[in-house]
Length: 343
Ligand code: 5GP
Ligand code: MN
Image (cartoon, rainbow, N blue to C red; front, side):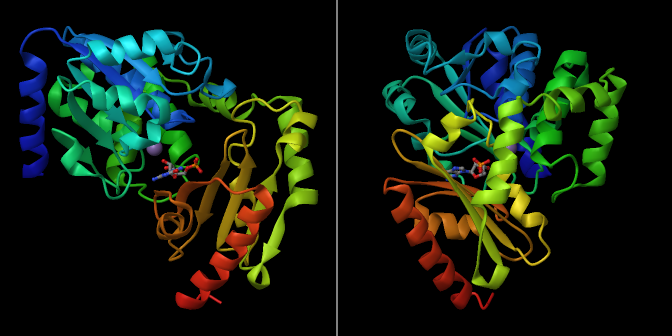
């Protein structure tokens, strides 16, 4: 706690002298927590008189498009000029919901190029490279970055800075990153924070409906296809994976974010402790890993697929073909399960 208070004091040092130009940057393939924490944090910073631009490398999924303020978020892939300008102009850059600058792909170079900007991190992933930041708020036992933003704002400005819209943004982040309050790190403090958000006037049933019941027909049919035709069980049913080709996605009129969450379905089978999803993109294979209990997919992702994340939810990439990637995956799981005595 003392450490937290010291960091808040340091943060105040950066934010109380003069209005600053601030970029708030969240991760590639932004999810509810990336967007929710960014929008709420931008509000906190603006309340302190700063000029704030929110940026994401590529487009957020359609089920987040209703979020108030999201239209001001610059999508770098679609508006590279403004994104680069915001980064080059920034006095401070906040990194939210991820910790590796190299995960920003084309934006990484610009960030490294802006030597005047102070870099600050607010994140809940494991192993932040602390030397890259002037200040690090990192807590992997926080369910979400949004909950971290809530805690930081409580000490920095007080919770009055959050209006109903900011509370909605934070709730979206918390709800999506906890799998609608079913994953780890569901602390009493978190539920107290949620109570605070409800006091701001958020309407949970309508947020639920906008986030979870707003899929396209294509996505729902794609899910059916994937579960029936594509899910493969390995290791005697202890692990499962889904590999989706671009041609298959096209058949279902695929939109960004449509396969989000598919990776969780195999884990609803009693025997399955680890699940993987491979999605083919033009440049590489995007991989998501999920697990339960002691199966550490962040270790697995780092070791075999140049990735990382959390113990039970990680990701990575492969530049091999999808067939070769899946072959490597099966071998890696066999080795990993043997080594960890999971078979
Ligand atoms: P998702 O499967 O939802 O894309 O990612 C799950 C988790 O793994 C997220 O917390 C995400 O930040 C992390 N993650 C996804 N891809 C990568 C990657 O390529 N490298 C690292 N270090 N983490 C990743
Ligand atoms: Mn998150």
